[in-house]
Structures are given as C-alpha cells and as structure tokens.
Length: 479
View: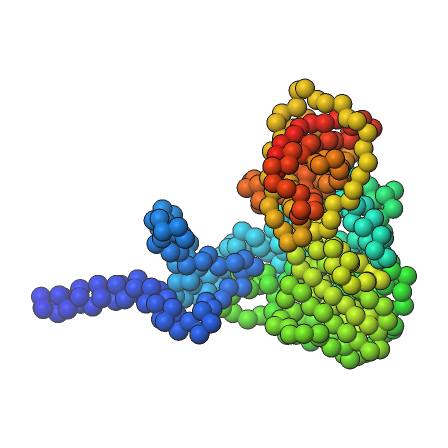
C-alpha cells in the first residue's frame, strides 16, 4: 500500500472515531433545538426517576454557580444521543451472559420475573423501622383517624404490598428469608389494638394467588388487572360496602402493558406484558381538566354511584381509579407527600382511604399530614435540665404556620409531643421532616404540626413530650 493510501486510511479512521465520539453531543444539540414551545424537555426516561435539570451559569442572586460542571455532567449523562439504545444493549448483554441485571434497582428473578431492588428487605424479613418508629406510625394514623371522625368521615389505612412480598418464590435463590418479621408485620401487629381500620391487601393477595392467575405483572412493580380487582373487592369489604358485582364482570386477557422495570433495563426495546381487563361500566366522568392518570389531583363523578370518597394514593392507586370512580358518586384522588387531610373541612366525604405502598411505610414518619394541629390540654410539665437544645424551624403555609424540628434523641421513645405557645398547647405528629431539615435519613425524634398562621413571629414555643405517662418539657425556642 502506498504512503498516500495509508495516510488516507489513517485520516478516515480518525475521522470515524471522532464522528462516533461526537455523535451523542450532536444529537443532544439537535434535541435542544427541537424543544417544544412550552419549554418542555423532549428527552424522556423510563427509569422511574426525574431527569437532571439543565444547569445555569449564574444563580438567581447573580453569583456564579460553582456546581455548574457537576450539574452539567449529570444533565448530559441523562440525555446524550443513543443513550436509551446503549442502555438497552448493555442490559441485554449482561442479562444473557451473566444472568444479572445491569440496573442496580432491578433484579432478574426466576422465569424472567423482574423485581424492584428496594423491596428485598421486606421480602426477606429485614426490619428497617424500630419499635418506637412503628409506634410513631400508629400514633400518627390515630391522629388522622380522630381528625377524620371529627369531620364525619371513616378512615381506612391500606398498604399496597410489594410484588416480592406476594411472589417471594420468584426471587433468585440467593435471597433467603431470615424468618423474622418485616416492617409491615410489625405495623399490622401494632395496628391490631389501635382502633385504626386496616384493609389487609397483603393477606387477601397471598390467599388468592394461584398458578393459573397472576396478580402482579412480571415486568412491572405493580399489580395487574386481577390484583387491582381483588384490591378493590377487599377494600369494599373493609369499608362494609357492596362491590356492585364488578369482580364478576366479563374478563379478557391482553398483552399490552408497558412494564416499568423492563423499561429500566431496556428503554429502547418494547416487551409488552400480560394484563387482565374487566368489563366494568365506565359511566363516571372526570371533573375538570385531567392530563394523565398520574395527575396530583383527580376528581370523578358518577350518577349511578353511591357515597363519596377521598383517597390519598401513590402509583398503586392508578388501577383503582376506574373501579372506585364507578362505585362512588364522587371521588377525589390525591397524590402528595404531605397528604391534605384538611380537605375534609372544605367538602364532606363518607370515607377516607390512605393507600401507601409497603416499601414506603417510612413516609408516615417523614411527611406530616396537612391539617390543623389539634388543641390539647397538658398538665404542668417537669423541665428537663439535661436535654439537648431543640432544633426548631417554621415556615408559612397558607392558613398555617408549619412548625417542625427535632428534640433530644434521648426521648425518641416519646408517646406524644406537644407545642405550647401564647398559652395554648397543640399536639404534633411524631414525624421528622427529613427534606426540610436537610437530613440524610429520618430521625425518630422529630415533630411536625400546622399551627394557626396568626401566631406572631418571635413567639416562644415550648416542646413537651409524654413518655412513660410523664410530661417532660424538653426545650424552648422562638419561631
């Protein structure tokens, strides 16, 4: 080969390598140029997470953004060209060669079942919540139930089971059960004597599963149409209501479900999952505008329905909306971390359902429900001279002043906590506002409540705990 041909070959090789390396950035630039008029990012993800936001060079106060480089790297990593195709190829390669998942949050189980990694502790009997935290959850639910009752509503707590809790036999053999109770076991035991009404979906699903009828999707974290129908039927039994024969309607099988776990592994390749569809009448109507089934608030009305329902829900509640929307004359479905219990003062509801997936039980410890803190009468408290200073913060929240913080961890087994200011005492939730306090994890010595907004700034607030029947003032601070 002549020297000229060799140079040409070298040039072509370098040009090809540079082109391959540059293509992801070029495609990203093209995506940026084709953003829609609303400014929405056209890049999509099926990985059950939010994409990193595009960074800015200067912050709102005009100073240089010192984290720009790190933020840009995260933004670019989420959007570079061919990302979904490369993720898909890598996922298929690792699963075929090594029978393992390329995505840390996805487990490849037996018979190609997929599981969400954070659900493994619940499936193997690993407790992540202490006894005192379980008691705090029960206490918080009791406060919610008392408030619902005072407003003429019946509250039911319903924990949607993780798929691995219903089908642990489909997990890889390396995941062995400890023989110990998990978080939900401990919570159910504690709730049994609390007076809080519980819808035991886990028990119903375990009893009903069979070889010929699946209740959860193989490639998704959620229950399928059969599981959702059983969930609806069990909820109606818990509420003491007729299910209107919905479970007996005609059932058909489809294969058109887009599994979220599969999309995390292979976002560029579709693999429809099986599902069951019931011929339940769809005469209900949406009230107001709805963009998707994942809207933060959805209202329905049905002329043939009976009763009213307020449901706080997460993604497991999506499959229940068509069933409950047809069953009740009026429904309101809300997705929120701090559930707005005070909606009960704006509109009467016969029933309140608080649905929460099993893996997120700790949310009952990290987000206080939004409702006026109940007034309380407490005796003169013994003052603790050894307590560490309390951490107290507050922020205006509409008609409320949201007051939250931490007290001495030595009193983390407290049975209740009260805030006293301007001569009035209020009971707070045993809840650690983890995000607002910028903590890495929730602490068992947190408190949170919504006080009247008219409480003036600078008011001195005393924090009192009830522990072993004794009232102890553990700190004081100004709001």
